[in-house]
Image (tube, rainbow over all chains, first blue to last red; front, side, top):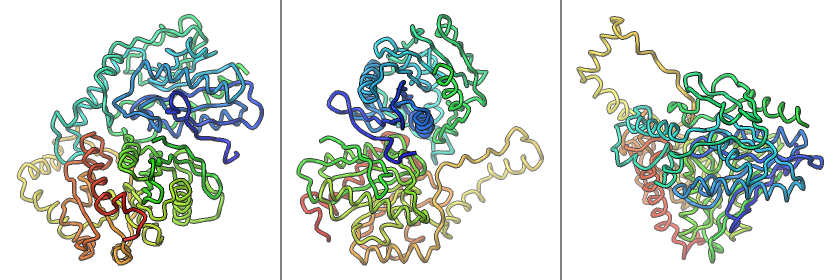
Length: 258
Length: 278
């Protein structure tokens, strides 16, 4: 792999979005936009996103990873994260990827809320396909899970010498300030199917009660990945999420449609 | 102020984000090293918040990924990890010197980042200050007394222990430890000699240890117990934050940490005088 094949840069409005472009060694015919999840999932998935991007670049795809406003290396504070802005940033990133790669056809990939963003942005960003890994479809349920984990964090004896006060943990989710507006946006989130081929990669625990029918009923399918991914385990909050089966599933899907 | 994304280094193998405030030419540069395996943004974006706050105060900064971490690649050379770290930080200092004219640097590291900052600070004359967050520490006699004595005289603890021995609490099973961060031990005499050498060279040190490392550090007094009289040197500032966790997950704890680092920097390396070695 060429050392300088992965190029970091800023782009978008006021050059405030951080991107990492993975150029293929041959002229690209297709491209992938990798939409990151939000919050701690973004940090936990960073390594895996990089591994997947490099695998796809080696297969001849142009790949762009990026951070939404208020996340990662992009401009803005964590409390400024806004759902509608994330969807717009994905569309902005798609424009940037088309410009850099010189191709029109973009497949979007995303894990958890990154999958939700990819589905929500599919029309605006003109994605040709969406691959969503355990996307969040029911925002209300997701918010309740985060609230429960944040409440448990307050008394986490493995982390703190003594329980923290309620005010110490208020208005945050697992390490990040949360604006009331984002809480409302996610609480009301109900992700609909995208009008493009959609592959859902399912590694949620069986107990999660997930149901993907509503986004794959028309032009999609579901593939199961094992073992289940420990997304919501407080004890593994700072452990990277790595999944060779996930990389195989995504690269395999893209070879199918090559 | 705008941040700059860079691919840099002797093999163009490193990735980092430089923040260069207007008019900061020649100021002391602050370089933030990876905490464990977390990429350059730091745990819960700690390094982004820190560097931007320092940029606003007038300091040029660089947060970057060491070889093989985050978005950085291997350099391709045949070096030990310590040699790689020193060479990577050398590359980082050269970049910040080029972008902001820095000649002197302050290194900031959490956990393994503190260990790496320590290694470089002990040997590189361009480093004029360091912030060690949960860096080297040793279980002292004082630590053991503070840790075990309260347990010995706690009747509830004895009752639980006897119940378990009787097989009465089979539901409690030991949990497998999740490896997250770790500071590899170094000989205590060596660490003390390093600290002594740093302050004799004119370096300023800020050690902040958290309640999250209570398995080997549990009181402000332990700085002196661990490292001796060098901890009382005027160039050394220590702080023990018993209430916080190892990675500052709560935003209020993080804000207090950042304010502490900002205050220490402005006291020891005021932006107006920065670049002049004390």
